[in-house]
Image (cartoon, rainbow, N blue to C red; front, top):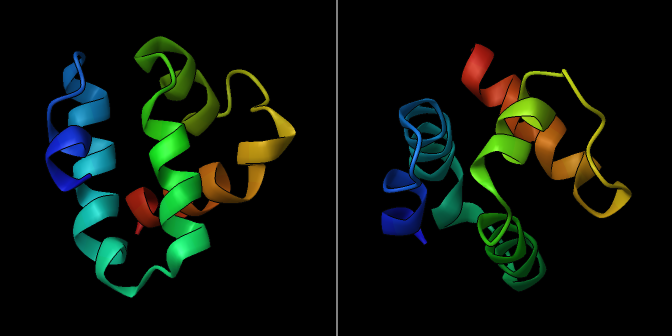
Length: 74
């Protein structure tokens, strides 16, 4: 998943998701990893809009997107 976080397709998401993966993957439980895996299957343009708050994310990803946005801002 770390490699999938780093090689997204658009550089902005490479940076955002690789930073998140570096800080959080090792501490995630199985459910968290499953959620993150599902998120990685989403389109980069959608992910970028969700993380930057341009568009509201789907409910299933709202907690994870919020966490990613907060992690990247730190």
